Amino acid sequence: MTWDLSCPVGIETPSTTPFLARSVSGQDYHAEFDFELRVCQWAERAWPPDRDCENPILVARQLGTKRRRWDTIVLECDPDGLRQRAEFGERALDSDLLDVIPHAPAEWTYYRDALPDPGYPWRYVREAIHRAGDRGILAVRKNGGQIEIRRKSVYPSWVERVIAIENKPDLDASAARHLAPQIERDVAMGLADEVWVATAETGERIEPALLENVPVEAGILVVDPSAGDADVAWNPRTLDPSKPGVRILDRPSGGDHDASAARFEYVDPEWKAQKRREIAERAYERGWRSYVESMRPDCRHFELSWEEPGPTPFCAAKDRRQTAAECRGSCGEFEPEPPVWRTKGWPIEGGPGAAIKRLLARRRRRQRPGMK
Image 1 (cartoon, rainbow, N blue to C red):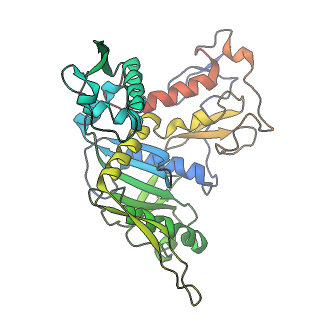
Image 2: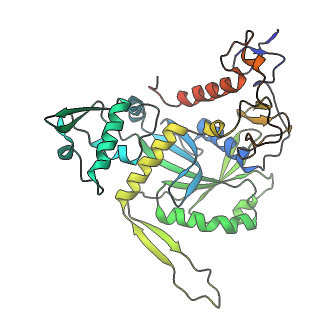
Image 3: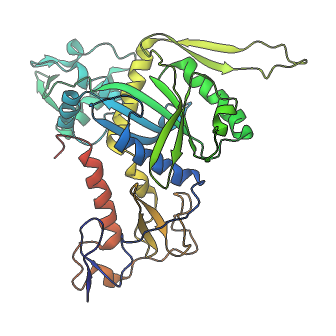
């Protein structure tokens, strides 16, 4: 067996095995999944695009609230707070844990005296307390039949700004008409500090995105996926998440035969602050490289294509970049890795598919200082 020492990640691989060494150019970047990964790679490397910022950046994808999911999320973090957050582990704190951990006292205290009224039955709080104890992020004991808690570390305020990006590689008039109501709702809610639309570069003197009906409060990023660069075509309006927002429930289309009124409700700043914490926690755990968890890297045809912006998934059987929806066990081209790839001197336990997962996990941890 021979070894290919030119692997871009510095890992020895059998030259007979297609693993992490493909370079692909001239592909169509208008597939939204691939474009989304390119935007995430650029944001992790170059955010913010139009100002100096030395704060650490976390990037995630496909996160949001029950009613709205954003393609890309960028978190501008407090450096000390982000390092402190690592003391609570890599896994996210869900909404129940966030009702407990930030309020945990410095000294042993009966949990009902230490925590604010959650607004739901206390039995769910007790379940969250025991989960936190099992994870080692909260000290829990029983004293005379009562559950007492004590914090192990102070939960920090580690997120300074939340940036939402909607990815539309082909932002034509039809796409803009469908996108505009979503952006209007994002701006009215004010959950994020900024809202952007990212679209693929066309090379025209005036980018078509500037001529479409996109709300002026949203910024426009023009992305060159092959080069891994982006330019600001329009700057966004800075929103204020600390103020009440407006949730648009129904907006009539208008016209000569539609005189109905719009329906909306106000959203208080406390709800917005809680949702921002929940989104930030999920982003901390998942990042944007978690796409591999919903694909089949254990397929013999699964590869990572390496270009200047960074690695993206590639299907050797289809000879193109596949999407997360395509890369399933039900795919007609799916073939499990041959057992020989996982034995007989293979230097990475589990074969190339497992190695790809570990590679992406290591890159995700690099963005989380203090994480062991």
